[in-house]
Length: 453
Image 1 (cartoon, rainbow, N blue to C red):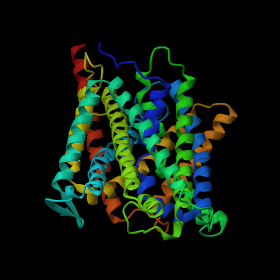
Image 2 (image 1 turned 180 degrees about the horizontal axis):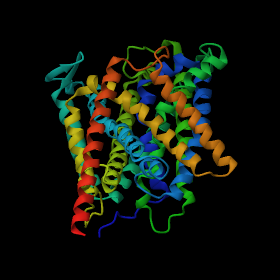
Image 3 (image 1 turned 30 degrees about the vertical axis):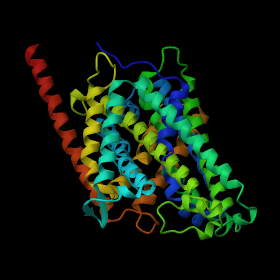
């Protein structure tokens, strides 16, 4: 019987976690982050947000040692809760990982179009007032096919790609940050807070979990660790991902605020970080470098989410929560090849929806991280760990409850609009139909087994 290849080491798990966690938010939301908190307020908000996520990371590190299953949250909840809760958790988590793939494919085209304006031609159609260009569409489809092939070939090749893009990305960021530092001034940091200090920090703190979701992707590849992998290193990889990701955002926020007064960032510009450095250096090359960094970030995030979503799809198929063929393992490549191809094909289809239609669905996917973290913390609490573990689980439940309420309560800024509610209803209905069909399949299977006996 074929099994998944056991090739991943600590550095591979960190590259996976960081690859999924850090995408292009540092490029496209910098104006909003600084407007929320000011220069120092935004930095302290991310530092506080990173600390807030550490207890949840601790919970995952303990759970993966006790239940080393690629199904992750599905497996954790299956031990302590009903099959319905287990399926719902996995179904929501899959949406979060999967939807990032077509979104990143489209982002690659948009970033490439910024670098090469000739790609902004041959408009195919418009969705939500946003044009869809043929060259950008072709680029996104090409990237999808190549990454699908890479992941079909093997986890080792995918891990090498993740490591390469992760460290290339960090190198690019360091170069443009240091180059911009020569043209910055401490006076640009003023005012340090956009409002009262605690309010400024809180306004940034509340969005950190959404931006830094992805560290839990580490546990989706638990069955692909090298035979000599130490169990405690899962916790190391998760903690390292959270700490480095938070430090990265603090560093980039400081760099942007140092090179240009943060109040001058143009909220209508799609890439405010690039604009800030262009104003400081007065050269196009630094914009090209920043956009190249963003393109590398897109590739690593796309690949990381393809790995995570395909493993979750595979694990749910193995548990008969989805079509059993998803559990097929390629006998030579030792990859969940059917699941990988399914994610690739679904990504290609979703690309044609365009960003305008994907964004409301992506907002629903964002809440899935909160649901998954909540289920993990609840499961760990049910394991009755020592008082320190219980405290971490309770802290995680508090944080995730606030995350869910922030999206569902109408008067909270950033809450669901009617479009997000429609997307959530459609996805939940589809999941309900699949769950019901799988339950009927199990009943039929048991009946056949009884008859044969």
